[in-house]
Image (cartoon, rainbow, N blue to C red):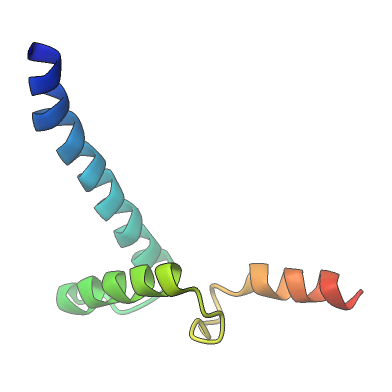
Length: 76
C-alpha cells in the first residue's frame, strides 16, 4: 500500500514537472520572447509542433539544423 501511495502522490507529479520543465527549456532555447504568457503560449505551440510535426511550421533559424542536415544527406 505504501508503494502505491508513494508512486501515485510523488512520482507522477515529479514526472509532470519534468515534462513541463523540458518544454519550458525548449521554449527558452528556441530564442522566443521572455514574457511569461508568451512563453507559456510558446510551450503550447512547441508541443503542438512536436505532436503534429509539420517541418514547414518551424521556420525559426535556431531549430532547423537537423532538417538541413537530413536534406543535405538526402540530396547527396
